[in-house]
Length: 145
View 1 (cartoon, helix red, strand yellow):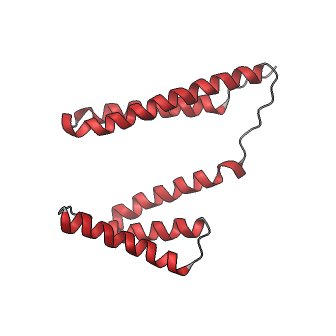
View 2: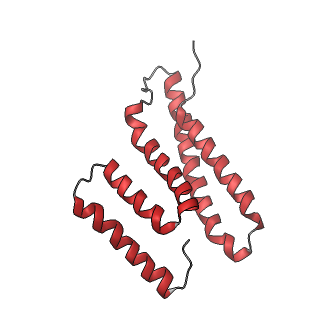
C-alpha cells in the first residue's frame, strides 16, 4: 500500500518555515519597526497551522480509503502565474523604479485576467499613479524610487 501525505501538509510546513525565516531575519530591526511585521507573521503562522491540521486530517481520510483528487494545473495556474507576475514586478521595481514598474504590472494583470476595456487599461493605472504620487510624494514626502 502506497503511503501518501496530502499536499496541504507540505504547504503548511512551508508557510511555517517562511514565517520562521522572516521572524529570524527581522530580529535585528528596531523594536518599533518590527512590531507590524511580527504581527503579520504571527497571523500567517496561525493560518498555516490550520492548513497543516487540515492536511493531516485529509491524509488520515486518504489512508481510510476516501478519495481526494490530486491538484491539477487547471486549478493552480492562476495563482502560480499571478505569483510569477509578482516576481517579475520585484525585478522591474528594482531596476526600473516604482512609477514605471507599477503601471506595467497593473496593465499586465488586468490583461491577464481578461480586462479588455481600453478605458480601464489606461485610467485605472493612471489614476492609481496620480493618487500614490500625490499622497506619498507631495503630502508625505516619501521618495518612491
